Length: 159
View 1 (tube, helix red, strand yellow):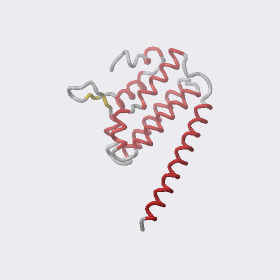
View 2 (cartoon, one colour):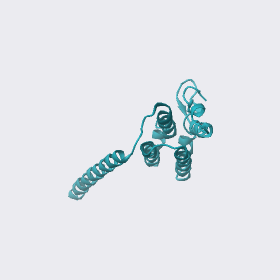
View 3 (tube, helix red, strand yellow):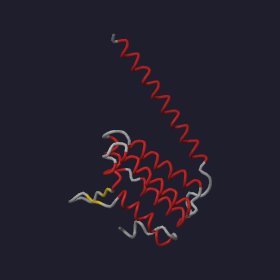
């Protein structure tokens, strides 16, 4: 494990286990001949449903451990969004497996926690983030429904 990347365990009490699990899930292995690292998360996601659920449960457990360390509401919201994005896109066949090699939610959450504790970033409420996330999700769903409506009209117009 790189100490420079995971030095939060020295600064934040009892973070060693959380840092190690994060490293195991996101960066434990390296493709031979490259510097590209990956962990158990994309490997577990090769197992349909069970792999996705296992990764989600481990990430959720890491989030709960970080919440117990006194993370602000804003950090908790950002961490939760990372986990939900990883779980949602990771559940899509083929695209999700590729996505999991690049989007490392646990490492992102460790970085957020380190920034919170060591640099006093991400303080305060996460209400604005929640509102913007809901707005974006609603816009995407409306756009998808609109596109599906026109796709259906085009398909039925062919017959």
